[in-house]
Each structure stands twice: as C-alpha cells, then as structure tokens.
Length: 277
Image 1 (tube, rainbow, N blue to C red):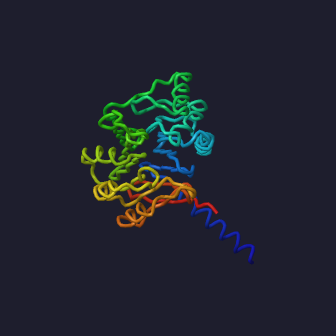
Image 2: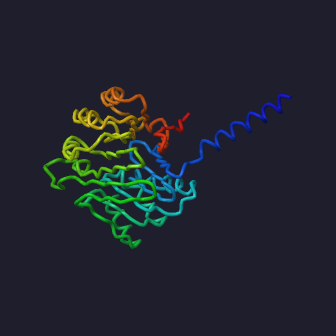
Image 3: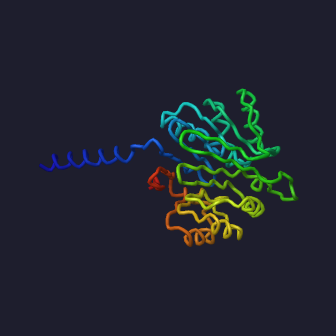
C-alpha cells in the first residue's frame, strides 16, 4: 500500500514538473549562469538563441555544455558588452566550438589578452563582428532587442575604463521590458540615463553589485520588479546595493547561490533558482 502511494506521488510530481516546463509560444527563458563574479547569460525565445557575455575563459566549456544540454546547436547572436575577462573570456571556446551567426561588440580596442584572443578566434572562424557606434535594434522570435553603446569611447584617464564602455541590452517581450546593465559604473550610468529610458520589469544589476551612488537614480528611474546580481561567495554584492534593491523589490536573486532562470511570458515574469547545496 505504501509502495502504491509512493508511486502515485512520484507520478503526480512528474506531471507537475512537465506542466511547469511547458512554454507558451510567447515565452522567453533567460538563464543567468552561476559562474562566480562574471556574466554569462543565455536567452532563448522560440528557436532563437541570444548570448550576452560568456564569463571567464574557464567558463567557456560550462556555457557550451549548458547550450548542448538544451539541444541548442547554434547561437543566433552573441553580445559582448565590454572586454573585461569575466565577460569575454568564455566566448573564445564558444565561437570555436559552435556556429555563431552574429556578434555585436563595443567599438574600442581591447587590452586584455583574453579579449585579443577572442577577436583572433572570430577571424579564424570567418565571423565579422558589428562594432557599435550607434544603437542596434532587431526583432527575433517574439522579442525585440535594443543594444545601446556609450555616447563616447573616449578614455578620460580612468585606469579601468572598460566598464564605462559597457553595452546596455534591453529585451522587450510582449509588455515586459528586461534590462541587462553589464558593468556600467557612474559615468556610463549617467550617460545611459540621459537617454531617458522607461521603467522596466527586470534588471540584471550592474557591476556584480558593487555599489555606486548613481545606482540610486538608476533604480528610481527603472523601478524593476525583479533583479538578479551576478556575484560570488568570495565577492558578494555590497550591502548598500542589497539594501537599495530591497527598497524597490522583494524579488531578487544572486548567482552566488546558483543559476537563475528568468521566465517571461504574457502572464508576467518569474525567477527560479537552482540553489547550490
């Protein structure tokens, strides 16, 4: 009798899992991978696959494995937001191992060896990237994508200038607006806010949760219902950033606790986290 009850429960939970995994035709699934203090974001809408950054060099195989697990055989568009090693490194393995149809990059010369190696890998694989000086907009499946470069790539004496050149990606799916803020810091935040962006439903928080006072204005303008921070146990988000997020939303996750799935459809947005033990 107990065995029959256990079997019934297992069948019930299997049916629930299958129902939960069913995607409406307008659904957008975003996977923000647990790769430490780095960005590796996979977006799937229908058959269209968009990758925003790919983590460190050692994360390339993890990104590739994640795509293969989902039976995805090509990347339709790869966006590298800037040339820091924790955003571009894993893309080397990606372009060497899987067809990538389109690559969007910032328009400045990289200094980090991983970024140089990535550009060499693009040439070797016959991929001609688009280097942005003006906004790029395109439609794909049931989403619209906007990629915005900085107003200027001029280096103003900053030692670590890459973050200030971050491309900002906005995805609109139905009535939902999702913003991926890369690693933009104060100058880039002010530069982007000058374009008067509308409020959003979701925000990939900038710069791994390193707090900047300009983030107060960013959060006030965007008013996001859901937030994800790409951080790690070793380098967690600043307490001031967490406090600011809590002021605006109760729905947020940190990748230090595991990969986050963002599910977006006509009913709204939900976050689910594969928590590490």
